[in-house]
Length: 260
Ligand code: URA
Image (cartoon, rainbow, N blue to C red; front, side, top):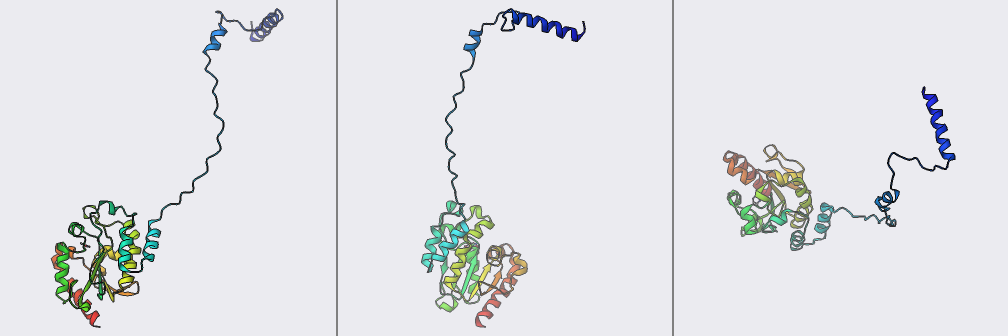
C-alpha cells in the first residue's frame, strides 16, 4: 500500500470512530488521568509586579576635589595641619602611626619638600629625622643653615609630599600624590618661602609634573611662582656617595641665590 492509500484509510477509520462517539485517542494501556492531574505541579503564583525601584544617584567621591576644598578653606598653617590630619581619603593614613606635617621655622626663606615619612619619622611625628634626615642637617649646616638655626634668615622649613608613611617605605603612587597635592600647594602658599627645594623625584613629580632627578637636579626652575631647585634626595646620597659632589654644587648655588 502506498502512503496516499494509508492516509485515506487511516482518515476513514478515524472519522468512523468519531462518529461512534470516540473523543480521545486510546493507547495500548489505559491512562489514569486523575493521577496525572494530581501529579501536575501547582500553578506558579506570580508576585504582583512591584513598582520599579528609584535609581539611586550616588555621586562618586573625588578625593582630589575634596582635598582641594579642604585645603582652600585653611587660612593658616595650624588650620591646614588640622584639615590634612582629618582627611579620610588617603589609605596610607590607616597604616601610619603618625601624621607628619612639618618641622623647622615656618618663616624660613627656604622650604624643603621631601617624599614621605619613613620609619623613624613615623615614630617621631617629624620629617627627616632618620639617617637621611641627619645627612640633610649636615648638608645645610655646611652652608650655615638649619631647621633650628637661631637666625630666621638661616633657618629651614621642612615638609613632605605625603604626611603618612607608605607601607615598607614604598614609593608614593601617583593617585596618592595627586590627592595630597592641594594640601602641599596650600602649605607652600601659606608658608610663602622665597625658595623651594625639591628633594628627589617624588616632589618633582608632584610640583613640576616630571621626574628624572639625575638630569633635572641643579637646574633652577619655577614652581607656584617661586624659584625652585631640584636636588638629589639625601637617601640617594647615602647610597651613592659620589653624587655628593653634585649635591654640594647645588647647596652653593642655593646659597648664592639667597645672597642674590
Ligand atoms: N625621606 C623623606 O623624603 N622624608 C622624610 O621625612 C624622611 C625621609
